Length: 186
Image (cartoon, rainbow, N blue to C red):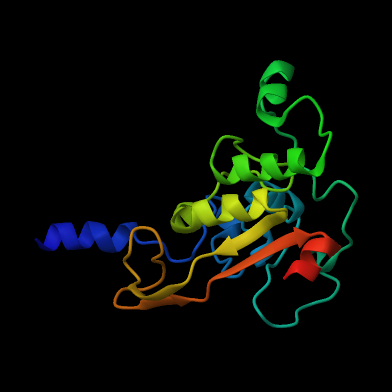
């Protein structure tokens, strides 16, 4: 019994992201939320940083405070052959609904990633997946979201992180692009 408890304790995530295997990044304890779905871009952009955000103001001469380059937000990936891409994304968008459908298919896992989101939908969002797909098809193009969580243990397989004996609370939210017409409809 004690052995099984020990393996559970060591497999629990310390943070809600995978810890870097690079020794010089092992003390990193803060990441901007807007990079949560772009870990490769985040690592590339921060490769020459000598320190990492820690919630306090640091040395402004550090590379961590440098300028954004035109290439820092771009990560090259492929959706397969041209034929594969056309099958997933369509020939070309002719109407707004064609774009909405690509967003919905991403949320449903039928499109593996988007240029600004190199990872598939995360398991914590599976509980709101149908609602996200419906929002996208209605013209509310979701770019970030999370379901509400009310007091789940920090050891929870999907939502848990941090030390033993803790509880996870988070507000549900959804960020999206929306047309002026849909704003008026709200």
